[in-house]
Length: 485
Image 1: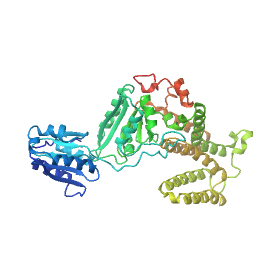
Image 2: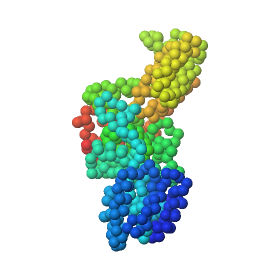
Image 3: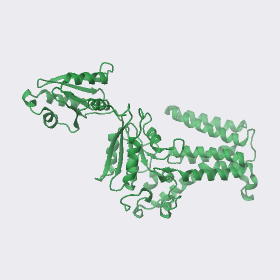
């Protein structure tokens, strides 16, 4: 909800009194009010300690200290803005509530007696880390820079790769209290303007105190499917990946404080692609994609299929009858799968929370307890550990972390359905999963496109890593203004 406008007065005492109370100058040690006098005129600066570039402000204050009263007699505001404050990012405002929002975001407010405007000097800096290579999206060859938590750095990393005059960076703020900075990025000459408007309107309608979890909270507001485990947007921390999607006609959403950007809209198949495939020769890239698909499908279907063959061995041909377990152990087979699924998730969470220096010890404990000892005491059988290890590797081979978690839930669902209804449960479970995916939409884009609805050319590009010179058309489902690359 927007605040009512509080006009700036020509009386500096009224302005500083209001700002001092609203910003809590006396209550917060890091909010600073500097009462100054330059050219025999009262002035005041409001700033947040830690957000200001001290050297720049010191330089500007030295320039102001050298002014004479005559220099500010006529048209004081324009004289300061255009002559005596030599800085690039400078603006004015006539609303004290806007001044409060600006100061809390980092810029410095300069209040001058006798003028009904406040000068905003955007000489801010944030504690940031360097643009390091993302941990999740590593490549053997390729750029090593990645997005960081500062939105201005992320826009710069994007513009470095997209030097197109039609690249747009639209600025929005979300959150009544957090005032989180958000940027919508797209190529105006390519992106569908209806899609851009839809995304812009979705973000503008968000009414909440803040975005505590950054881009993930934003996704939950704009996706429209709150209980759907499958991601409706794609996350990336790689500027080159974001740039590639901009060229296709996608819209990128950046959230300040998050090193991940959102790619919209996306289909199921976008989450199965990785930059490594395009950093190799087309034949090698196609092979890597094929192997990745095998791993992903194994992570979903291998365990339910093995369990089905174990409880109904008559379904197996004579030649591969060895697939079933020779012995089931003391614990029911389904319970073994459930225990080791939960155990794997516990191990994954423990690995996240364990300091790096103890990670090796955690791996040894997990290998001994879950593997060796569990088999020896009869809690698990070797085949269960083997097939779940293959499924786990396929899960970790999934490029999208969010998709891998959703696939894991589907795997458990198929296991439960198979245990309850046998072959009918497995078949109906798979069909229900496919129907659910087919009914999903990401910003009115079919989630399973180009499989449903079918498009041969696009479907071929999904399964084969085509040579870049042959990819001369943009994805049709994005309705790009310029369909040719």
